[in-house]
Amino acid sequence: MNGRGPAVRTSGRAGGRTGAPARPSAPGARRRRAAALALTAGALWAVPRYLPPAVVSLRKRIFAEVNGDREVTVPGPRFGADAFARIYSDPAAGGRSEGAGLSDLFWYWLAPGPEVHQEHLENGPRYEEVARTTRAILAGPSRDVEERARRCAARVLDDLPREQVSWVRLRDLMMPVWAEFAYELVFDEPCPPHARRLIVANADDVITALKCTGLRHPRRRARLTRYLLRRLAAGDVPHALPASLSRRECAYYLQGTFFNTAVVQLSEAMAHLLLVLAQHPEVQDRLGGGDPEHDRDRAGGAGTGAGTEDGGAAERPYLDRVLEETFRLYPLFGIAHRIATDDIAVDEHTTVPRGTVLCFDYAAYEQSGFADPEVFDPDRWRGVAVKDTRHIPFGIAANRPCPAWRVAPLAMRGATRAVLDRFRLRSSVRHTRSLPHRAPCLLLPAGHRVSEPGVRARLSAMRVRDRTEDVWRSVAQLAFGAWMVHDARRLGLCRNHFARERGARPATGTAGTPGDPAGTGRGRCPVSGAG
Ligand code: HEM
Image 1 (cartoon, helix red, strand yellow):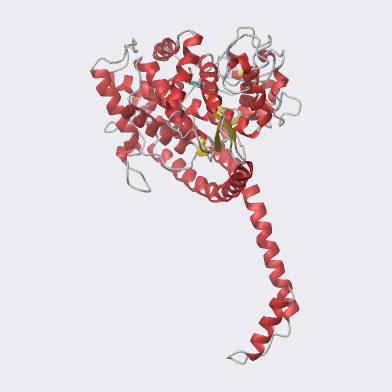
Image 2: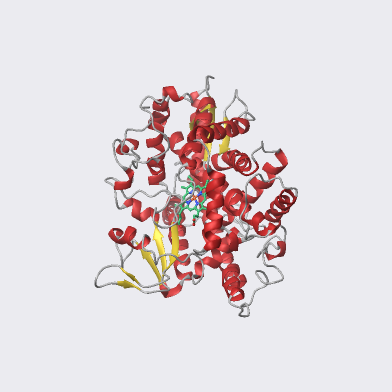
């Protein structure tokens, strides 16, 4: 073929209709073509490899820039990992929203009602009341939590075909599970399909905007608010809600904590865990299907180290160690931020001045505390007390840690068991902390023979599709991210809220103003115009 191609073309040119003479520089043209081919191949190899991580670090830098020169990242050039826990635990590292440019962006992403989201509330009586309510709603025996999650997962998974291989995105697969779970926590009854659709639409919109893989759609979220308002008016919520909140604020609180945060965090965490299993068949083998009796290293105990009283020093079931290791390699939080409400003396020579925006980099901190930190090794947790390590999946105990630190690992265990009861998992996609692809995966029905060559072919196709999608998605993320940073600054939801609280005139912006206190942007989507 090599010999025939050029020979045929050369004679064509010489004797063609135009009568153009054959080019004397055919070897030169061949070299140029080869160079162009090599360049294209190089670009095809390099772009998917380098562009997505470059975009992630650029996004990190953009977010740091939003806070200007009052921002300090820990660990970072000024303070190492050794100072991380010391600064994070300081009582003066207590500001949550006011005074950080980044807050406008987080309020924008979590609207409506970001001013009553627990994570945004400043310390004080209102925060205490809200936090108490969350703890009460999350309370309950561990066995019930695990069982509830297993039941909710079973309802969703039983809709999938049980005799053929299914191609799914794990985050999308898990979201209805946690929608049902959160609904049951709040309403203490099974979740009707209509409510599940509203909750999934809301949570999916939040996480899509947070990952900058799309823009936010305030009208979708407003539909859930209206539903919650109706249920609250009918007296359908069997929990005592914060007395200082109006009915609308209670709807925003439930929407923010349970139908955003809980659903989004559990879906992301499960997508990471199941993707890890899909890429480590030996771990699936060792877990031995969905029956806990087959969890061969099982030796009692419940929850992850973060959820145990001894910090996880006792031997724990293998699934718990897998969970711990997944949290360590893929911490859900990239950066958690605080605003210094007073000077923080780090040592006798260094003080972090009041007003500094402290960005705690979870991934860098976790990486700094382990040998071979990039290696997935659940057995590194054998007999290790989590509290003695740099592992903080649910935050720092001294500074408003996650209220679901006990419930989340239990619920994830229940859901994982439900998945392993029914399927074996395989995936060939790249696994990163930010998981923008929503974790594509093949589900192979347990107990059914599947054609291994067929599965391998599908995995190859999945790999090619993943690398291709990575490129355009990275570019889209940059564009969506830039737009949302701009739009969030323009709306200034947090800035205007505190300006109003102080009786000052709000800064410019169309939402987050007295006419639109929820900061919904009046249902306007800047690209599609849709809600
Ligand atoms: C595996 C799942 C989860 C992980 C890994 C996780 C992780 C975290 C972390 C690291 C923080 C502290 C961030 C900081 O210091 O700023 C946090 C805070 C929080 N989480 Fe979670 N979370 C999970 C699930 C949940 C669930 C199910 C809920 C539902 C109630 C929840 C509600 C909250 C709230 C309300 C806060 C703010 C706490 C406060 O400021 O008082 N999280 N979470």
